[in-house]
Each structure stands twice: as C-alpha cells, then as structure tokens.
Image 1 (cartoon, rainbow, N blue to C red):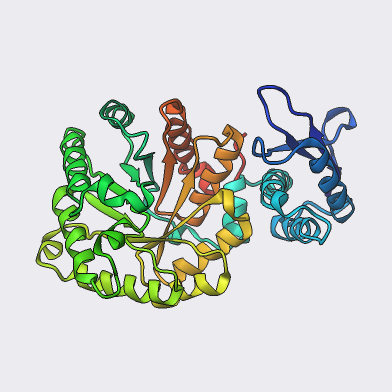
Image 2 (tube, rainbow, N blue to C red; image 1 turned 45 degrees about the horizontal axis):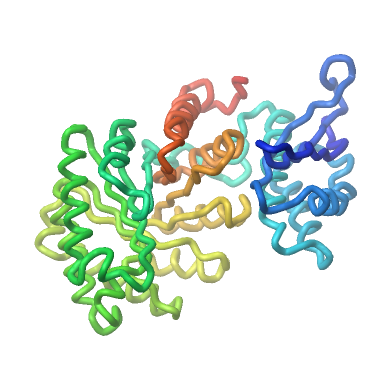
Length: 391
C-alpha cells in the first residue's frame, strides 16, 4: 500500500510561483527506491514562501504515513489542519487548492485511475449523469472586447462566446438606457457566429445590469423581462445564456424573483418559438444552506462555480446537489491558471458532468481552449471511460 511520506515546496523564481509537492512510497515504489512525487501550483502573488512553509508545517503531521486510498478523506484532513486558528485565512484557499491537486494526482496513481475517473467514483457521479458534451466557451470582459479580439476568439471555434459586464453603477452609459448597446453587440456577435454554421451559445455575465436599468427589479420585473426578450431577439436562433440579470441583497428575494422571471420568460411568444430556451444562470453560493435553496427552488437553469474561490469538495458536493434537482453547472477557467491547474479544473468539469467551461480570454491564451478540447477528447475515449490512467 502506498502512503504519503513527505510534503515539499519548490522555491519560486522570477517567472514561476510556488509549487507544493507530495511524495508517496511503500509497496513497489519508483525505481531505485525513490518515492513518487506529485506537484500542485500555488497562485502567484497570493502566498509568499515563508507563509507557505509555515502552513505546510501544520499539514505534515496530519498527512504523514496516511494511505493513498481516499482523496476525499485526505483532502478533509488538509482542510481541517489549514483552517486551524493559527493559519492565515487569506492563504487558505490557495494552499488547499494546490494540495488538493497533488492529493488527487497521488491517489489516482495509487488506485490506477485517471484523476477525472477518481473524482467521478468518490463523489458518486455516474456516466448517465454526464452531459453528452461539455461546451467550451471563451469569455471576455467588456473593457477587453474589441471587434478584432472577438473575431480572433471566433476563429478558435469555441462552442460559444461569453461577454462579462463590469460597468458597475455606470450601466446605462455602458449598455444603453434601454439596453440598446448590449442588444447591438449581441446582434453583431450573432452575425459573426452565423458564419460558423454549428450550434452556438452567447453567454452574458450581466452582473445585475438589467435590474439596475429597471430601477427596482422587484417592482419592475416586467422591464427586466422586456430587456431579456430584446436580447433573445438579438441572439436569433443561437442559445442565449443570461447570468444574474439582476442582483438583490436578500438571497431569498433573489431566488424568488429569478424564479418569477424564469416563469415569465419561458411563456413569452418569442420564447415559445425558440428551439432552445434562454437559460438563466446564478452564481453558486458559498454556504451549503444557500446552495441548497437554489436546488430546492430550481430558480435557475444552472449555477456557475469558480474553482479559485472554492475547495474541490464544496464545489463537487454543490454540483451533485444541483444535478439531483436537474440544475446544470458551469465552471470558470481563468487565463491565469497554470496548465497543471487548468487540467485539474477540466478533470473536475468532466467528472461532474458540467454543462460547460467558461474560459477567460485575454488575447494571449489561445492555447487554453485547445488544451481543454484535447483533454476532453482523451477523457471521452472508451479506454479512459474505464478510468484507467493512460499516462
């Protein structure tokens, strides 16, 4: 039986952040008796080397000589150790994410599984839960979006384009008092996408913009609905996905109003003619009780999860709850992620049967979409569906 023997830190350099390593050994270790080493990446500029070393010292005793048989059990040990009173709160998620990455790779190797297959087994996701195809969407923020960049994104042939608003209180100036600027953007994007010829999704991260245009989305839900229908018309036959068209301070009011908007939207004459309904998406809530409310009320078609703000455990348990309520999930994949971290997020999305990956595009990361597509193709082969590590 392979057991954890040590935790390592690779020092940072001018061009690389910290990495954390995990060694396992025991029965039939690597050649020449050397332990096997698995690495995970820490996010740059969040955790310095001395603080990382201090936190690793907290974790070493709880992982020492533990068998590499259960990813979830070992990850739970890490979370309990690193959230002890003397651990730095700001460093929790960054180190937890890196150690989860190493533990996943180590246990998968010990169990002769791919990391994706191990997650599917340990969290109880079965092949029937999995979406027929995990859509890869490229997303750009409003301040980065130019016609040239949009055309460059389309040339990469993603399953859709995401557009995220960051205007804040200047929303009317950014998208028009009646949303006309945003509708024009969607219409022009549709025209560019028509040339692709395959089913295409337009994902709008609205950040509450339609609610701010309406003034009070509780009293004026009809105005929000009208904006949604206008965007629907602008999207033509393409799939339209609207993330958080309004934002309310009260979580229960947000849920109820989103549910109400969903009911109104699906019954409009324009919606009834569409082959694919417009989807409403909400951001996954950090607290299990709030996440469960979304699952119970089914106010949204899908929730979006951010791996850089959640532990793997909380995210996959949340997705599992959503799937039980027939609610889909999207995961974000930031341009800043290292290739190793990006692969871990892709594995999570595949294992959980997510509806899509929303990949941030910054004009310099053309290869990230290719990486995701290649990894998903590998995971979808019959060999890998069995869960055997292909190397």
